[in-house]
Length: 190
Image (cartoon, rainbow, N blue to C red; front, side, top):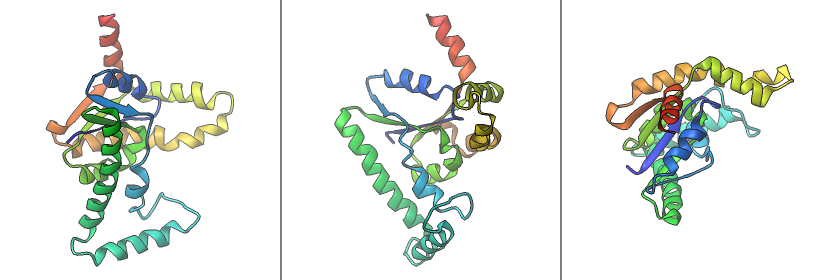
């Protein structure tokens, strides 16, 4: 109940929103932890690569948990316990009540995050995808057009996955924020 996930495309303004939220006396955050990607993405048959043969690892994990009393649910419970413990440790050292995990690329695993932490709050930050692309081009690609391929998922898949993620979430656990609206509101308050 005391975990908040802030998910967006990279270069969508998540750091600005994180800083605004972190200014609240009850919210603690750290720079993009990325800790939930490996245990949850590892359940997928495709898209995950590793030196140790991720296809075999995927099969082995599924073979392992299918014989557990709770099956796949036991795996998610184990992930919840382990990573919940890590988040709680971060909270304990901060003295605050809520931990905000701002990792934009969690757009890949929104359904799995919901299953792992069903009582968590989710903030989906949306920004005009053309503005995101321009930010990626000017910040990360610069004068090397070959680098654009490194961001194909961020540019092509993320907008749809974010919208699908919104559809998976209950309204009581979801806040959708528009970057453009956030900036206009912030400027209006200056």
